[in-house]
Length: 295
Image 1 (cartoon, rainbow, N blue to C red):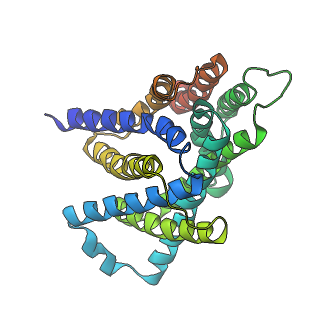
Image 2: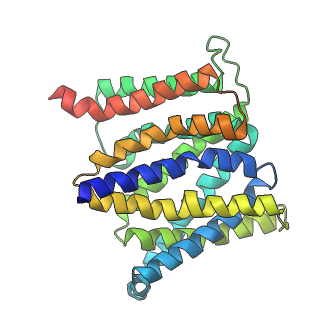
Image 3: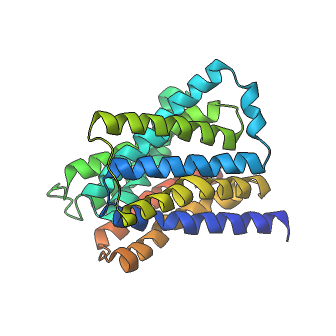
């Protein structure tokens, strides 16, 4: 099999796996508190990434790191998994799975906005128009289609879901500047993130013994959402001739996720969710096509 074909295979596998996570989060949160879910998931992910480092013989890279490298990883771990997933899981607790998962996909738009002050990037009027289209999608989802009333089904949940996109965008910007090996970076991020989450739980609710279903769902989230799927996706990017050839497959994930949520979680997919998702993804894709259009 040619490398590009392998890249598509890995990318499709990663997309399908990520598409299951909205349902997994929502079902697991019926049996466990959101912070406890995150603690178990991050510890599981750390173990998965440690095994991956050992198998790929990259564990020795830890020896070459400086105290500043570890400090950077601690800061990144504070953004992801700690703040990002803590806020996102709380949003899943408050909203329908279809709403929390779809609103989180606004992060590429947030990334563009943050890149203006942080990376000194310029933005065209067409890009601004595309961003407004995507943000209109969040309003459609948040108000469940009642645009003119501006009445949000759960305003706190909507704000948390959108805030998670900001944390992920910030993580992405700072992570790009970190030149360590990708898998090593993820391992260190989740190591530090696990510590932060443990401290948070001890300081707030205290440690709880999870039920069997809560434990199983949390471990699944750690393996699929935060562990092995990252590795599969990195493999797809490495094998692909260009990242663009596989990266757009990710935008299939929210649509596949809606189908899984409907049949597994039992949620009736709202027309407002579907239309809002089309606006969000449409705005993002239009922004990506702008360089070609302007040429």
